[in-house]
Length: 245
Ligand code: PGA
Image (cartoon, rainbow, N blue to C red; front, side, top):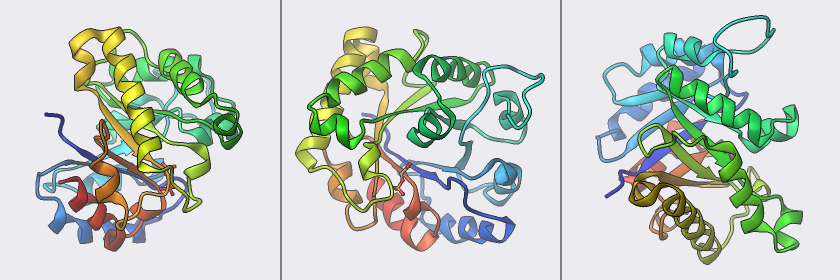
């Protein structure tokens, strides 16, 4: 049995005053699923403190592949770990689009996350044009192969399927479409890693809300969600955490 994950991606939202949401979330974090919150880097250390004793893991939203050096504005995986993070989102479609991140870069970042002891949350997902062209599975398969190093295990890596057109739009694929992609990703992981491929958690992301979380999390091979907008307020995210277990 894979333990479900409710992961929140705050993106470029949140200041110190937002940490009250962590306090408000604590009562619903009862240990039935893994809860990960990924604030902007400026809040990682403070959120780790705010979450102390709650079982909430704090994560970053990106890291560099190097351990240190002349990379102005970048953050090393080791720095996230030093701030108390336990995970990092890598290859989010917004990073791929805004910063030109390629599968190869995400692959190197994933190695860096493991080097620092972080769980890598590796994101894949098709654009609307790719779905319309019927190339969804090709695109996602290529991203999965290219972005995950051979050392990936269900312990050190979580996969997140996020259709680009569903992010922040209020639109979601049908449950059948979600199942098709998640079953496909599971098949690829098992083909590559054997029975160890069964251990990876595969999250769905893109307009997950308290109102649709339970039905999405019940879909074949959906092991939880990566949630943007609805993770910012404890009043929304708590319903999603409860749906995950
Ligand atoms: P959304 O974002 O839940 O606001 O659609 C999901 C994500 O990008 O991780």
